[in-house]
Length: 92
Image (cartoon, rainbow, N blue to C red; front, side):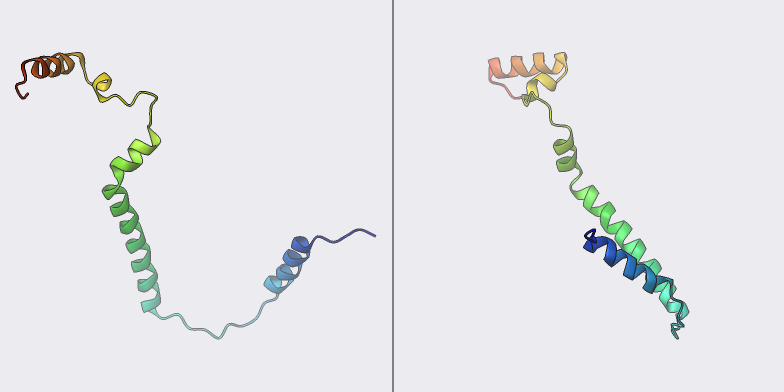
C-alpha cells in the first residue's frame, strides 16, 4: 500500500472546498473600492520613499567591488589634484 503525502491530501481536500459554490450574502459598497485603491497607492508610495531614503545603501550593497580604495575610483585629474593638496598641506 502506498503512503499518501499529507500535503497532497491537504490540497486535494481544500480544492474540493474551493470548487463548491455557495452564496456569500456579502455587500461591497463603493467605499470598499476606494479603500483598496488607497491601500495600494499608500503601499506604492511607502516602497518609493524607502527606496529613496536608502538608495545609497542599497546601491553600495549590490555593487560591492574587490577594491574598496576610493582613490582608485577617482579620475586621473582628481587623483593628481588630491596628491598635490596632500603634499602641500593646503586644502583642495
